Image 1: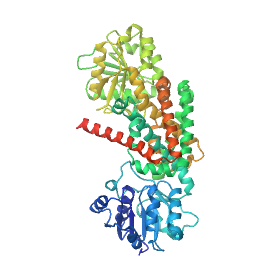
Image 2: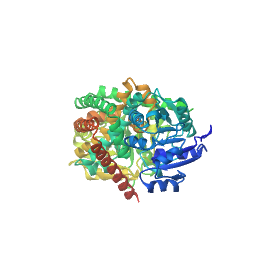
Image 3: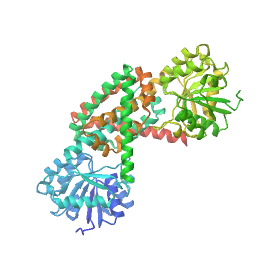
Image 4: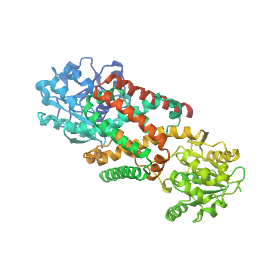
Length: 297
Length: 297
């Protein structure tokens, strides 16, 4: 049972980059009694024990859920429904279930369906941290330091559950904010899902083209950044794209319209308009940098 | 006059990131007798002297060109025609004129027109190095270390001129390669110009949108990389986009088609096809990393 300063026994389902880093960060803070892992691959769980990320692991998530004060779902968003159904019957009334998925509307729907009466104990969350690396070997105790974690509680979410999850992420060094789940998916659809899909699409397109070898040989600046983004986990991003298909599809549609206009400017050689667009983008970048500098000093 | 090991007197027209770094790299190698700068803004030239990038500067590029063994054009590609016309009458028969522009067909046309009989002394070049930072304060002696410099000599280009420019860049630590100018513009159109325009367009689009503040506040991962690319010099990129409008317009058209197909997959929730596309992109990234690792060990 959790004391006020500890989050108690933690069950991490999906001990990858996010789940593993959560465990490490809580251990660093001395804020967790025991971390149990569960996942599809026993060899990954064994590796997580060897790396000191989890204390033990189980092949019975239902039984483990019955002993947990907090159940954290670190699986791709498409897998959440199945996992939630497996643990739902066992989760204790005072326990909390939370997730780290990059979309929030889909996991909320899955939780509502799977948890039924226990839905009030589900706190949807999204740590805005990560890396193009994935897997437990990439997990780091400092991954969330000074990073935002967005919680998107619903009308029915218990206040004490939100408070417990907020405390958990603060132990990890994160800055916790609340927002509406639909706003979350629309905004992250533009700032995270869209750029990832753009990078995947460009790298795939060039890799299939006649000039592929030469293009990758000469990859520098811009394209190298795109390839780095495209090094992200395909399954995780497949699930995000499918789960957030409405917002992402709409963002892609808007962006295609933007590119069509830019293409017209390029083909007509309209330098003045292009420079204005480029300069506006640079100004936005400079503002962003200034703001971040100010907020950390 | 240049000895065999020195490139002699260098006139740098446009002492920004590239021109300034060239001067610093040649000084580091002890491979230049004197570096004179010319540019539109005297205060930038004075700064370049203070920083030890150039030895002196001139307000008379024609007279300075008459004393130069190598004239380097570090100006945006749209400014090359004007600069070349100014120095053309003064360039000595044995001197070499070269540039660092990101497009090659346009500068070659400008040089052919401006230099006339002296066109055989023009060696088109493009160092594949840079930064989103610009200006002489960003110049670094090691900017070109282990980076590629692409030279795109034409049929009429003098062999000894190409050799002199090759030697110059090797002094800077670069790996020099030759390629066809049209191939250069097509390939760099895809790997450099397109990603830059995509980033400028996305950042400008989001900055104009209703969610702009929230989007920039939550900028992480993918979008943060896009904003960094969009921090590049708007005038330089305007000139590139206009100069390479045919190849860039065509690359944009192809990419719009790709995005339309991806949008359809997203909106239809076709996870299998999306995962295959994302996985293919990640594989291409991994191959790229493997190759680079092999080539440096």
